Image 1 (cartoon, one colour):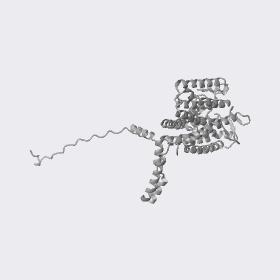
Image 2 (cartoon, helix red, strand yellow; image 1 turned 90 degrees about the vertical axis):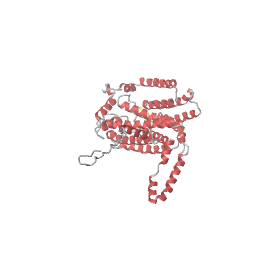
Image 3 (cartoon, one colour; image 1 turned 90 degrees about the horizontal axis):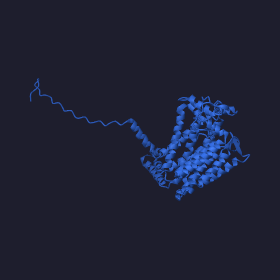
Image 4 (cartoon, helix red, strand yellow; image 1 turned 180 degrees about the vertical axis):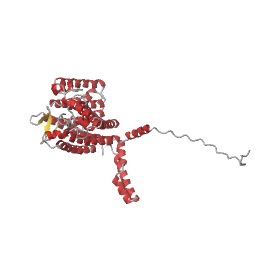
Length: 454
């Protein structure tokens, strides 16, 4: 080997090692999507969506009721917080009903169906008795229960129809009678039409539309054939057309769809000023409490048109947040109805979801000028204790059904209470094993019970 110029042997350079191929980086959007999909498919997702979404809607509704009702209360020579205090009291009572309903077993919910239906029919008959029924805004659908408190029995009729209809269809499905059209329609449709007739005697077209939506939701979940479904729908549309055509007030409301001017005799005043409120809100609104339309320009600012005040004060961001909460609530209800094997749970969860979703769509559509003003409140959001109480009980039903899912019960059984961990940490590892092991065994035993037990 020839030497180098210095006489030293040449230095042998180490051969370069082949560099290992780096693993491709994951797309962050895809990673986020996968994580969100896993979180979305967890057993307790529906439970948390129903509980969290309903509570957020209720709390935000209390804030907006306080903001939207102050001017109306002062104009009536009442304290500024008058309507808020009544709504807060109703929310507290509704919270108790929600908790009780969420802890009741399914068989007890089914046992309440017939008494609740009978009680609702009795109260709706009392509404038409002179001296007992009270007329509000031309509709006689109220009963005075003393002082400033009034009760609207038709709101409880929605809950009664959901429970009774779900129990009826579940019993007929167990006996395999739903394949015959007469068993699918009778007595569900006649009883629903009886409730609709009692409601329409008072002139409340909006509540009648919601009750009709619940009826069609139950029939669709029961697997009604297209011809049968279309026949009942055509009868309902025909009756609705006759009721609208024979009432000048309802025809005027129908003519206000998409109106941008109050029109002759200001017949579209409420619809137009609702659009004004939404348009002046912008992206983030004028600020909480800074609405201009609630100063006497927008009728029913704290009830039927509270969504318009929300858009004016909280802007597009606030209204989209409310819509997102209702969308999450609706998705969770559909998920509960779709994943259960109990027919009563499926029909009841589907009926409640149809009720809340249809009422929210009708209210928001009327505020946006896309639908006629039906006079229905925004569920859990608008002012009105008679509407809030049965709705919160219905939310408790959904929570109970979400907890009753086998996978959800197993996930809840595996959770350890925090006080048990703290106490175990104080006692040490030897003492911690006892209580923690006993709690786990107790929960596993409770998780092995039937779906109707708690």
